[in-house]
Length: 356
Picture 1: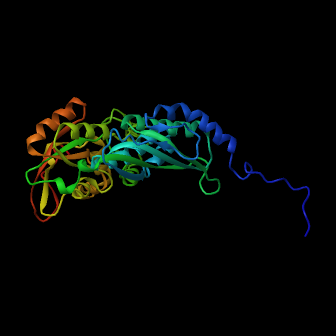
Picture 2: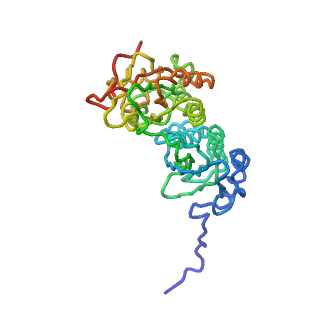
Picture 3: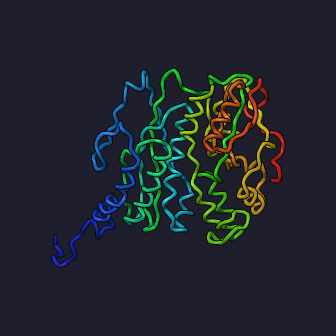
């Protein structure tokens, strides 16, 4: 067998993976990651595993809750606009607001970033957003992984996911078993599309309507891209505050599948939630998608949150108290409906949206 002595020597960098760029990215995002911590965190960034000490003086019978998620094709908008410091907030929201549904306090999160080529500034911007989301949620960013995938992903492409852990006392777990006839359903307003339905939104607004991301949209008071990149609202602390002050039965995070299918997940057999569309008007972005794409209402309500990002089910006696807690925390909230005896469906939407 002959050997080509003059051929270039193969290196990891020549294959498309830069260890130096990865190390530089870590140095750039360290300050942001350090801001997203809690007293229970042991050690710092750079270990093989993150350590978190459960404080048994605080939790008597702690139950761990876990959730994993990503942000879907909203990333395509971030990449097209070259804006990467908000997508991390979306990622945290998708994870921690699933945790809080059962009453769990989010305590830690680990992220995973898959990227075609590590550009330290881009990775640092992504982690900055993740850290900001963790601060908003009150949880620690307990490490993560950035994986460079040359040949598998284009240089400018990336995707993100995360796993979060929450803690709830065994006797304070919320869920369908607590929901009762006569309970009140309270809606919490969304900040827009959040992180669901972007495949349909992009198809309608960018492909069908041919609207430029940088174009100003009068109904939004800003560009289309800015509207589409509005970060997902993080409700974790708001829900925990509500549960501490009022008799909360359960929550429902309104994500993929819309209001009806997500709320149905926490309505038990024998009961039905009847909701009134007339209690709120969806934001202009929803009307624009419906009009430009001639999207039927049923399809809109399956794909999007339609302006409701989180739902609380509370006892009728504590409905006013729950609304007061949310109002004091500057969360748009209103009575959306009520729980009654079983009908044909677990969740029924009635009426029409004003001016939609």
